[in-house]
Length: 283
Image 1 (spheres, rainbow, N blue to C red):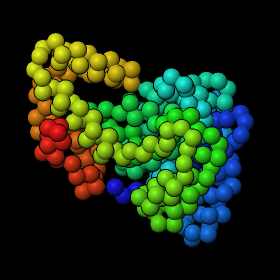
Image 2 (image 1 turned 90 degrees about the vertical axis):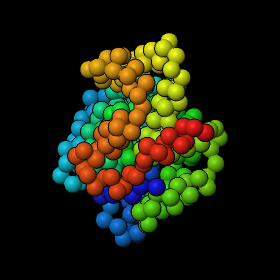
Image 3 (image 1 turned 90 degrees about the horizontal axis):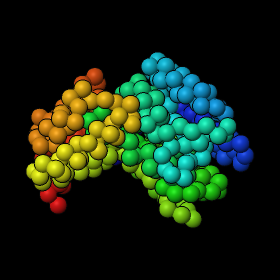
Image 4 (image 1 turned 30 degrees about the vertical axis):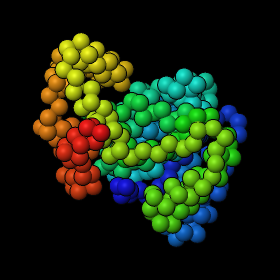
């Protein structure tokens, strides 16, 4: 489990009723004081898309000055699992959200924990690609429909332990002691996501059938475009990557994803080798 560094918990809430974010803040502020940690708990209501995105920009600017947040988002998730819905009915897709999270994560040197308290929020992982920068250090979210008490009790226990020990493992044990009606809480770290997706790339490129490689390249290209990224090499460049998933490609993507090219010390935090990934791909 990678280490995490933060100085505050920021809860952005966009709900018309049953404001679980506000209730969570009321529970956590005294806990933060009790634990003796200098961790500020900040609450903000964001009723519109503009207000929500503006808050994310502000968090990036503050992070650049050394004020690193845990970002907790309270809202509704879209039933088609493509994003979130805000209090005024506006929607934010995962593709729209990702660049804002990535900017904050870059400013925190890959230390951003995103807690998305929204139904189906765990599906945000579908936008993460190992050929671009990680949008977070880790993400925690329900996989299916979630009810208010299934947010308040588990997450209060999670944050209480995190404020106490600063240990994600023990905080997650506290959270998982609670049962949810459907699904559960999805927690994945950037190393787990990178390795899992990269293993998929290797497996997808092992069959040198031209049609399959071209089809897979088109799918990857389409997903990147949805995320607002147009690879300069086009589909042809992606096909080349799929055919030549060699250590030099891995090293390049690994250093970009974990920001080792701009924060060299991150190499000590995220130790993943091509040999490990290749071995997993064989299984």
